[in-house]
Length: 155
Image (cartoon, rainbow, N blue to C red; front, side, top):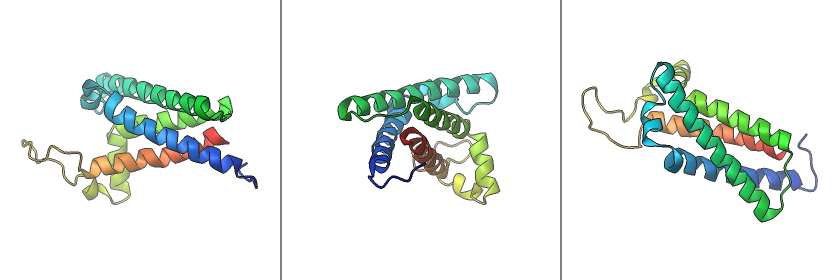
């Protein structure tokens, strides 16, 4: 599937990964609304809807980034591969951003204590920052799945 002595697939993968990574940073930190950020981890339908709205704008941002890449470079991507890649990205993003699944995965892998690193104490707002274990695990999860998504998109 990826054996290519000319390096064309490797170059396409690198370009697609870069575009998806940029889109991830923009969508997760600029495009996401405050409401989505505050509510996407809530239980029940309010959380599901907020998370789905975030994932929709996140995926649209990725699609725009890929379109810009294609227009700027003439890169040719298989629409089916892009569809599969963006679906992998969207589903994995939704799972992580619902928060409970990622917390359970962290606990199962023995990283539960790291997940809570930097979290404000109950009843206090004494660490309002991005520097939490939960954020680090969330971002590394997303980047791992961006790698997978780029493999599909560039295949």
